[in-house]
Length: 369
Ligand code: ASP
Image (cartoon, rainbow, N blue to C red; front, top):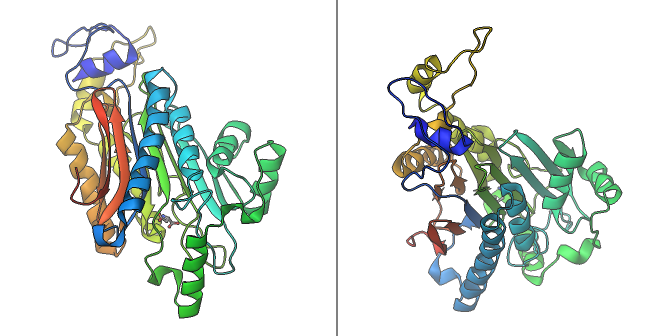
């Protein structure tokens, strides 16, 4: 297992008798050089609720976004750039609840949330309750890259966006007839945001690049009819988005309050990271010491490859707990071993994935691969 790590680090290091010396050229079976997964929201997405035209439109949009991200990764670009560009493409597509096509608040405004995280150094940026910026994911990225903060909100975040020179749009840019009808219906019925299934369409992406770095990002308009400055999980690092080179990258979608309470994105990453405590201790004991007697290297869980089924089980367990609490939705994941996948407890989830080892595929309904 330690071979995996050494290859990933490009190291050739003799550890204990139990481990093997490898060089950077070694290739491990089943390991992808790059990988990406995307989502466009989860919910009551069933065949009889979606017209063939809409089905085709969604698949085209998912394929286009996947191609943008895959091209960046194939050409040696970073996971951060792939995630950013993929989400920009989904934000610009009015079929999704992010950027153009975002849902309306009770007051018929748009308050957008977004976040992004770099698994190589755990740096992150997030914005909540913003408007005016064409692409909220670019603002989240600017918070990460250009400010000393992790999360900005409301008018202050809007001001930061203008100062950073990000593209601004008028308040009616985000509106689509479909979203306007949703808020009008909801207001006419006088029900709350949580009572209606109007929340599909949040977008997200997770990726691993050729350097083995992980990234995750999420962007949303939140829940139709939200009030009082409600903020969901999408901009909350650890709830809707998390990336850590040692374990995984996650982007979530669904009933945000539950994802926040469980800390879903971090919970999945933490369970993967903590999978090998005994093996880590043993490997750590075999690490050579420096002149002062300190370990020359810190071993961590990503060095011990988890199987596809183990990763899927961890994701499914956390989504099952979400369901027990009363939450619905799902996540996409990418691991440092090149695995990408999904877990959701809703009828469907707009989703897609591609790796250096596997053809791109997109899916909508729960019974698709
Ligand atoms: N998670 C988002 C929120 O609660 C909504 C969604 O994913 O559909 O704001």
